[in-house]
Length: 546
Image 1 (tube, rainbow, N blue to C red):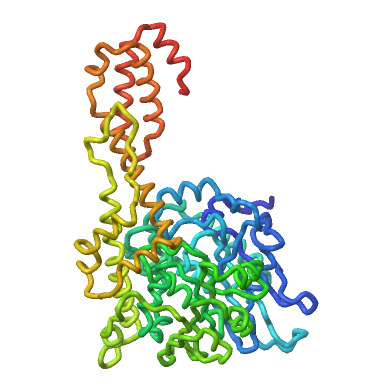
Image 2 (cartoon, rainbow, N blue to C red; image 1 turned 135 degrees about the horizontal axis):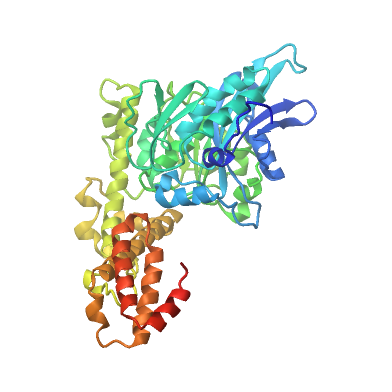
């Protein structure tokens, strides 16, 4: 190692970023992976191929200049379990929010593609992409970082020098954990908040990221306002949707907006913000015999108009779709007319809820509000709609907690009662969404459709796990508060030994936030062991794991 050369903490680097890639156009090979950094990172042949095709727009003839978008690709090969996360990622996932968890089976890619005229090159064009890969779904943060890094990489005499400097900076970032962070990188600083909470940094030198995973603006949905509640139902119930756009920037933005429509509920289905005919999952997602899978696809190749005619829900955008506008898209009830290439929302779906007639007026305003305000108004409407839908479910889920009298310190921890769909639906007349929203419609039918979706299964599993952990915590507290000295009176040695083993197990299961409970349990354990005969005490001590 050369004198003065810094040692990079690759463990810390990999908490945040998987790798940097440079993809270029080769006259003989086409799109080729020119560089992966750090050099020790390995990618499977399938991953390398997918990255190469995703790193360039499908048709780049009209993409002069710079194009930015993000992608998502599957890591694990078919038939194999997902790639394992690092121990740091596993620990981080235990403590963070659903929307911020590291993805064990996918990589997120943040692409910056540049195409400019270059007469000195064989084809007369400079065509190259910088791709930042990460397991973290921090779309806003990594999009900004790719935007900052890519021009430096393209313009450097030796791009690897820039990547090494960036990697060295990332390796000095704080450990991946909940809370506010400041992330210095190549003469710039980014501030964000991981998990719940606000980015309240007062450092004016930082580029402030208000939300790591939500789109900065919902401008992609504004031309779809008359259909926004219908689209909300489709995303909520996990329906397959394909977004057909003229550029990956437009397709990935709208896919991102769709996924964010049901926040704070986490969308659990597959999402591919930009998908190509060369993707390794192409046959899986498009084969007609398989039906339409629960996935939201963003595509740009016109070939998909024919290939995905069997999909039940399609949004075809106009070429002018984007921040500068585009007329309101009509609804087309015949998905068989996709080949006409007319912009619109193609679906047979009949919404369960009545359309909020004043929504367009509320969002747009009489005189035409600025787009950031329109976006904020629409975001608030969607948040209130999702909350009105979820509050009855959360309330019913809370009722599945056993009563405190069922938590016995001497028995096993109780488990949550089963979620019974019919029992929940019976609560709707008195405690349904009508308590928090004026929207009317077939709420029961919408809940029944939601119950069949992956979004419900994921939500239920998470809430059931949370209730189980809460019951275990209550059981620990009950055991810590009981008078074990009185309990020991008249007990056989075998019962006392069983309690010693039980206390050891409970102490080992205590989490970082249970310090008070752990301390009380340890005092109980010492008191009981001191009352045992010396030979039995020594025997238990010799068998103790500590």
